[in-house]
Length: 264
Image (cartoon, rainbow, N blue to C red; front, side, top):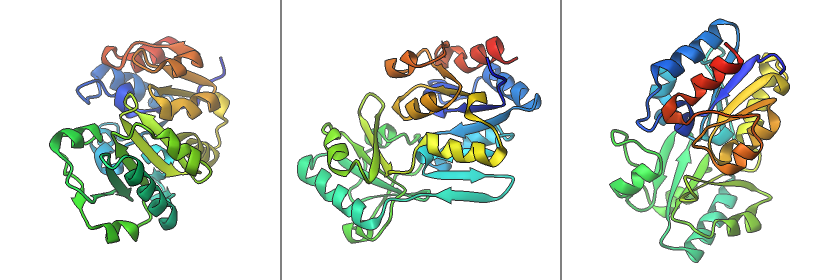
């Protein structure tokens, strides 16, 4: 195995357990890797506001990838890279979804602000990934939404999401996560793998020296790019099929188990 110089960690279903906590064993293992000189990179679908408490819990993380790669922040350099969906493309996708499945709940992430045209019930807010103590999206009129260039479009309960790929696949990336319940739409160039590739170029590390942990479809590109992909025991079959190792689940310290076995 090539020397591990960087570790990429997904949050939900990976570093975080089902209670959305980082276990002491996981924290200790990740911190020991950092102390040994290994770069730690967080790559999540969450926006900054929803990942902040977890990032604070691991303050040694310098590079953070949010929105599945549409936003990258570096704390030490006070810099960020942001990729949004063009206004006209967003308008077309919105109209397409509403025409085909008007019962779908659509919301819009705009550089860490969350909007919707219709109120989101508490149960659906949780399905969008928001915790009970987080604010719901701000309700705005359609004219406002039509004038924005969103970082990410979220569609809940949109079963025919593959039609979006067929019609707009040359302009956006479309990923269905959480068992296909939550559809996430980003700019075509926004992906976890592209964002992490940019980070690796910045710190001068080859992808063959990177260990990545993940559990869902938005991690698949990273698994193909990085030298040592680790699938969580609770992860999807597609990740397990291309992983170098399948570790324990996120509720059984799967990140620590793999780090202790291969790195520490």
